[in-house]
Image 1 (cartoon, helix red, strand yellow):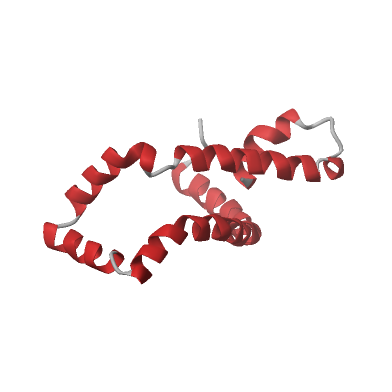
Image 2 (cartoon, rainbow, N blue to C red):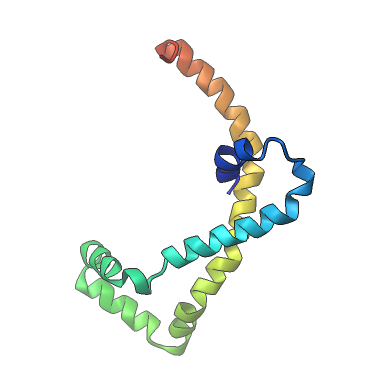
Length: 122
């Protein structure tokens, strides 16, 4: 979300005091995540997933997965995995956001090195 905010929202929000946007920005991010969750929906894309699994796994491997997921514990994992992923997404986003200062520190010297190595960009 930080990339989306920086690339798309920042130019649009220039004249607005950022401190006033926190709650609205959070709400908008939740709306965006809802749109993404709707798009990344197994049931809507079942045929594509079936094809990917068939191309990736052997029949024996798929049968093993079915055997794993069929008992109550496996069914519980399947049933709760989406909610768990939804709960974990903010943590993952925070971890990426926390890493951004280090990534930014790494990026600037790398870009300079690439400019020296390959010449200036056109």
